[in-house]
Image (cartoon, rainbow, N blue to C red; front, side, top):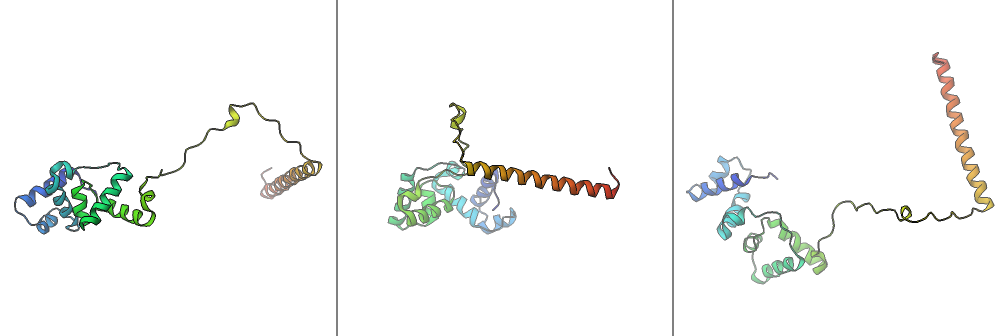
Length: 170
């Protein structure tokens, strides 16, 4: 979806208001279809330039519910509802409807997006707790693991040294 500047939108609407057809304006301005221009005109007719350029609002769940119920009660289209409530994108209302139908009011409550923040470690502020004493078997398992790791490391080092000798690197 292409984003259009505010100046571009105003220019397109002025051309339509001067008498050019919507289809003609979309061709002149090289727009892929008439849908965006029709939506802009609808917003302009229902609230002027300020409603047309209205962007990036956070809506409360109660407001979202009122919008959806008003749309259903008055049998309005998405465009009509968006114009009535100054919502710039009809897809926003459509999304709200789907969430409201599926999850009820709780679906309209905004959820945090993105990655959760890092939580500070509590151990930095408190005195380190003494470690739990390991049993005899646990100590042997730990020692066995460490010896295996050392053995693997030595085998890899030995293989690397042999390869270097073959290549004549010393």
